[in-house]
Length: 132
Image 1 (cartoon, rainbow, N blue to C red):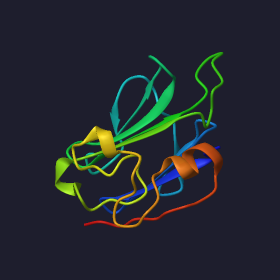
Image 2: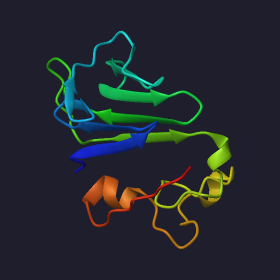
Image 3: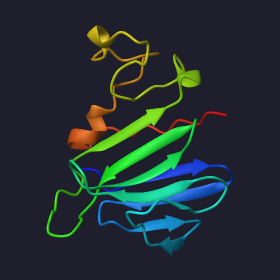
Image 4: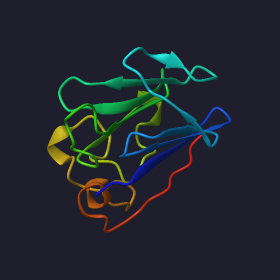
């Protein structure tokens, strides 16, 4: 089960936990359903539709959605979605799929790295990637 997601972007560290706690540079920020700019164009909000999740969106760069408890719905750690800009195609390891535009081979790792579902589903591996 996922415990937290750390995002280092635009000279900020954003930490989102499956308990719904969000920290921006170690300061707790309350996510609401109204998107808020928490600095440097980084947007934070709660999306209660579908599966309730906390969303950190850096438009044109990365969007991270992590299942969090919202109201009476408690599905924490159930799902994480990471969406990146097309400019990162061919540069990413450890994401579900190899980001080459062909969904038929998305179970194959890219560049020798494992697909992300190895850590999303059972905690068996961890990968840290840094990109410009």
